[in-house]
Image 1 (cartoon, helix red, strand yellow):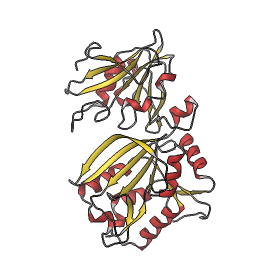
Image 2 (cartoon, one colour; image 1 turned 135 degrees about the vertical axis):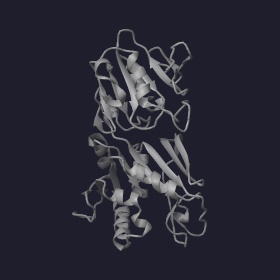
Image 3 (cartoon, one colour; image 1 turned 90 degrees about the vertical axis):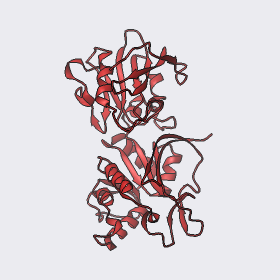
Image 4 (cartoon, helix red, strand yellow; image 1 turned 120 degrees about the vertical axis):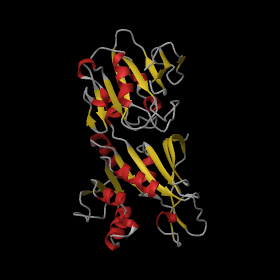
Length: 344
């Protein structure tokens, strides 16, 4: 690995009021270049900000200026921000080890790794030399919480939705499931997403629709695709004032009350990320309240001007969107992951 702090340095405009900060480039031995933010406070404890999933250092825009008592090191990750975007060859362990080598103080750590408490051995960090580090999820500018501790601890909430090009979440025509455009890459990718530990969040209508489709389906039906079966076996919170438990769902809990308050509390206490597939009205309300960290849109190559139903964002607020990840599946279906910010 080749690294030099003088290889490339530039002021970072995102933190004009913070301590002295700059963006440097780390070049891994694989040839990949990864930019990282350095905020320096002489004599302060070092903290390495890593991400539980693919993110750019922009996830920490709101947090970094508050950490004036620390020396901050926050990298982009592969494919994120200004980092190189190769298909393979990226090593988080290698990057972590390089960052650890910059500092020597092993006494402090902060945050969680994908919902579990971080340990010095995580991400390739070696016990004898582990520096302070935090592994964070999205800390977006519209977050409701003003407490630093809540910002650090909050579980990430993803609104995961399928859509046609013209913005409909379903159809009344003869398209079939996935609008007839599913392929092996899509199905494998969905299974990989749902193989991760997480908690599902549903509104009552979406829960009923899922439960009815599964109950009436056969083993060969696309309703029983492996990722759907995996989703059904994940723990779930169903927000409803009309449903009563127990539900026909292996690990589901019904919670009644204000959806915004329920999800805000879930984000504070959940040990795993939160995900909601569908539940359009619920998620429009959560987006307006600043509780949605990511909008994950799977865009199928169809226009349903005559048969489209369930317009996804109709009646919702206005948002600016930062694209943080994208991929093409089966040559025609787009997955786009955005960080939403209320438009003012």
